Amino acid sequence: MTLKFDEIGYWSQIKLDIIEKYASSYSLILSKWVNPSLHHIYVDAFAGAGEHILKNTQNRISGSPQRALAITPPFKEYYFIDINGEKVANLQKITLGREDVHILEGDCNKKLIEEVFPYIKYGDYRRGLCLLDPYGLDLRWEVIEKAGKMQSIEIFLNFPVMAMNRSVLWTKNTAGIGQSDIIRMNEFWGDDSWRDVAYSSTIDMFGDIHNNKESNKSIAMAFKDRLKCIAGFKNVSNPLPMRNSLNNIVYYLFFASQNDTGNKIVNDIFKKYRNQG
Image (cartoon, rainbow, N blue to C red):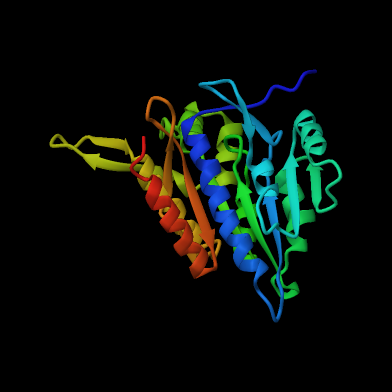
């Protein structure tokens, strides 16, 4: 089969720019660290093919893996993961000869927990910047929480609110929702407390109870609380809304870290993009 590259639009380009800008600062700072020196690692859990097609021009552009590989000073190592064999093959092609690159094929939830995160231990003077940009609700909370508890990993996280709305948040009556969608939502959120977060009840003048869906922003801010209070990240950015061509919010981009400097850098970067459209 011929590989079909993912097509991306304006806000996906912004996301790539944001991650590249922060990764450049991150690598520069950690490369200068001495006594002890730090071994810093870049991780892309849903790496894709490493390249994309622009929707408006049909031109091919570098994805997050290629951009990360071009950063100077470089990261010490790179881990790229994807479940699609054709995309993995393309990643292998564009990184041929790079001994500092590790490409893993399979479910990133399993690969991160079992093969990648154990290699980035705080006590071993290793640090990691991890991009979690899932295809919908394909990420599990245990990965996010593990990253927070390890103290050594910073994350950019795609919070896929549009996928959540389409799958489960469109109705409080869970009888109308597929069981597989409920399971995936529970796995992403970490439990079923999203049910209480996503809806509120009001009583009208006649005593009738009405269930109302909370705003996307309210749901995202509730997840921010989970990142801090449960996953244990010291710093969690106010999420940056990422939109489609109709200006609808598709997902929110979070940054979570234990590091005050990293948090300040990302907040400054986010600030530049909050009012763009």
